[in-house]
Image 1 (spheres, one colour):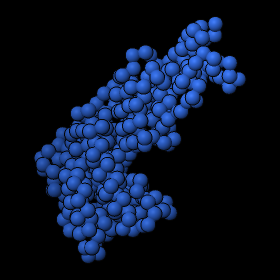
Image 2 (cartoon, rainbow, N blue to C red):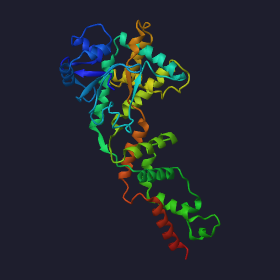
Image 3 (cartoon, rainbow, N blue to C red):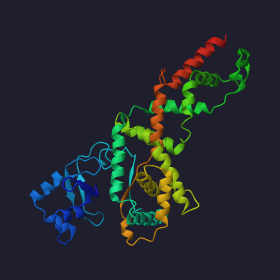
Image 4 (cartoon, rainbow, N blue to C red):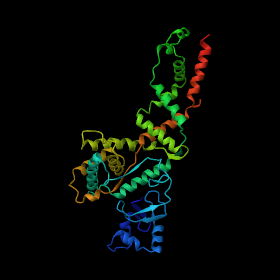
Length: 359
């Protein structure tokens, strides 16, 4: 759902209550009553006027307030990479909405209280607004549109890549590194191990390029496989150009978290990452400026209205390490000219070695 919309006639971004008031519907009644009073002609004019705040698509309908959700606009035809395109792109989990007033869970409640107060202070002190968050959404949306590609990394290619990466850290025995035919008579000699050694020598240049991705742990590796499974041959986007914003966001988050906790377990928290990304966005991704702004906000007076912190933030770097890894894996894959069935290649090498030396 879209909490805010962009109004062409008002040339600005508003939630539904603000929009209706500015359009002259000033009667002080429940929002659902106000919506019910709109005629078909009025609804048609609104539909023509309002656009998605991110991808600027039309085709909205008004959804009434419920116990769980506030009244909002729903668009049926978001553009492909729009963050609100939830129905089509469930598999493209590259960002995540963060409601600073509804982040639940025992540990998350503490985080929510901290960040919600910081956001309220930041809004009241004029550092940022909901408009800045929405402009940041547009920034990331345009980044996606400018760097899209068809997912061409398959599970087979991933398996090949991770096998080569494992060879980068594998050390072979002296008998394979300095092979002599007589070593075959050793009871510990292993033809398959020898074949792997030769395979590594044949692919040294490519294997060296796999060492860059040192941050790939078991969790990230699993995320990569899940992403590939759900997006193969679909349109996705390359996050490589967002590496500096991501790196700076992590750096700033560490500084912010250290002001509230000696533990670094909050550094990967969506809510802190969302707040850090916002501070960096308004600081043109300069960490030093963002740190200064954070200090001013931290030491500013208590917020007059804590509800100023009830805004929807965005963690634009959800699963970022997995997406970044895929970007670099694609580059490594392009270097390969021998195919990706490394099992078959090892069998061929082993057979050739036996034919050459066993006699």
